[in-house]
Length: 211
Image (cartoon, rainbow, N blue to C red):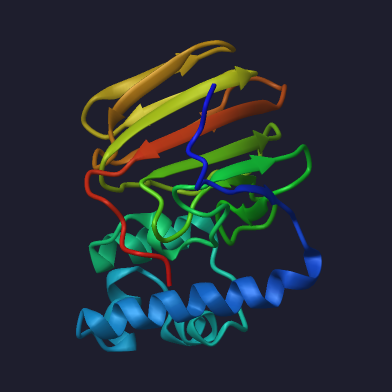
């Protein structure tokens, strides 16, 4: 395949030493989006169903929000969640992610929460891709909603996907479900075994330029 000669090939690394920089960048993105929306910290915290002290720590980069918190913040701000996530790969470039690389974030703040590995995310990305490896009994957060179109593909194990007002479906390995992302939804692992799930969200509108 002949690619764009102007495109760069990037290897996306997981650098533990960069965790503080990632938290600071996420906090800055949230603060800038809140100020652009003309919202006080108290108002945004109320809309996103979190405490103001926690949001203050997030904006300062001294606390890292979970994926569930990022989704609630993005929904309150009217943004795609990817706009607030750590950037993984550069938009419009070729990005290579090796086994064990990428950014991982907990799904919720609850003890024993599952983790999501960001494969493609961040400001400037129109496609958000997250890999979940979920042990039986791991917390998967509560209801999620976003903009755009969502596809959930089960690579291993079995999960149950519930769409508010629509119904519930059990999905096994090799099966998938697609739906508008603004339908409130949640997942649960079925059975004793772990599950590996790939989530992709194509946003309804282009994300803004990278910060």
